[in-house]
Amino acid sequence: MSQSLAAAKQLWIEVGEGVDDKSLKVLSALQCVIRCPCKEAQRFSDMYMKPIVNAILDQQVDRNEKDTNKTIAAILRTSIEIATKELTNPCNTKECSTLEALGSIFDKKKAYYGDSDSGNPQVRVDMIIRFGHSSNKGFHHLATRIAQRPSEFTNIDTLHFLLLATIDASFVLSLDEAPRRISRATMDHLLGEDDLTKYPTQYLYLVRHDLQRLCKKLSLSTPQLMSEFNQFWRSLTLKLIKSESQEHKLFGLKEIEYLIDACRLPEAYIVKGAGYEFVNGRYDISPLVISNGCVSAQTFTYERTSDCGKKLILQPCLMTEPGKSHCDVWFYLSSSTTGVDYYFHETNPNEEQAVPLRDWKCIGGSKHPPPTLEQSSNTIPFKDEKGNLEKQLNKWAVENDVYGIILGRCIDESHLRASAFLRNFLSKMNTPNLTSEQLALSNSLGQGASVLESILPLLTSTGPTISSQSQPIQPIPSSSASSYLTAIEAAKQRLLSAQRWKESMESALQGYLDASRELQAARSSLLELERNHGIIDVDADDEDEAPQAKRSKTNKS
Image (cartoon, rainbow, N blue to C red):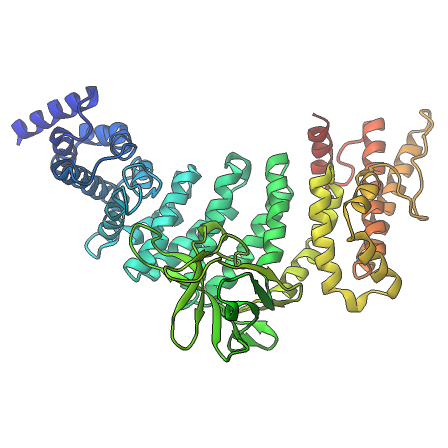
């Protein structure tokens, strides 16, 4: 045993100094990590496993090089085994250093995997199967690790690759429990983060989208999981729009638009320009997926009967061919009676929530040209286990004063566009509570960029409001300390009064706008008095004061 350990240590030194990354010596070094567990073995895997994996996967290898590909597959299998053992070691109190190597193995964009025509995509699928196999239960151990040690998952790009593998495993291995635990643990992890600004926004978007895809698939067996995701998405967005980071705040504003789009579907699509004339026309959402005025299924179908009597459908289809578009969703225009496909769209996984309008293609033998689509302006809301998603989103926006937060932090036109998008949604949801004058105002404010630009200075103003209730800040004689306290107390009463006024006017659009500006002016008045006269933390219970002061400083810088 001592001779074997000595040989293994020498091998680790040689590999660490640099050898051919596809050689059998690398494979032997990794196998020795499993056979000879010790501090030197741990140090080798900590330092070199990720570089070894990346060196292999970052270059293309012709699939005809059978010996080389066989060695690469063996190296990846051994790396999977090392990572699984490290995840499952109950005595291991240190961070799992092999997580990033595992993420690299599951990264489908690696050059070695390529596509089904020129790469080796099936190797990645094989590694997912090996990791999730019943003898390894890698995804179960991964779920436990995320739940118990979330601090190890600070590299959100690695988390993204692990989630992509989990999505594929849920299809390939028909896994359900482990992906469900991973999705819940990941949502808890992100909402538990005090500082989301340490994560790049592009990966925050990808992880959120991964969770959406995963929960959508799992909701077929666990319907409440989609409700949990929707609540998570709203909570995450609220954290983002309150962020002091301009980049993350703008990302949060974009997420509000995605939230609104995700809670409803167009009631119909118009297909135009297809080579087959009978394919063209209006496709209405199938009544089979509608319950109590809402779309009750996560998968949906649009259908029509042509003038010549052909029954046609527009629907998403899951593509399960390993490699080329593994477990992605494409859209098809097909015959619902014969099953013949006429046109299809190879949909980007990041855009599969909506029916694509452009870039459709002809199925082999179909008549050119492919069609373009238009969506109707009327929509039908989705519903989850907790009910109508539009109503849930409206309730969330009102209870958390989302519109007021956006206006209170409005500093450029991107904020204004987001506020207009939300305002239009809220006005639609609350139309029964609006007077004819308020409804007319709502319609006029949504009619174009020129109108929006004209009210931008008004919405971004931090000075006294135009409301008749607003009073300008009055200077206080420096000789009277009691006057300072009196003025501050009056300012606090004004703040409370503005808050009550604003809450009473939430259902009325114009009143809601004026009240939001009044609240901002009242808060500024109180802060100005405190800054001018050195009185700090007069009201420790007002949680909005410190963030507002810090926010003003951030905006100026």
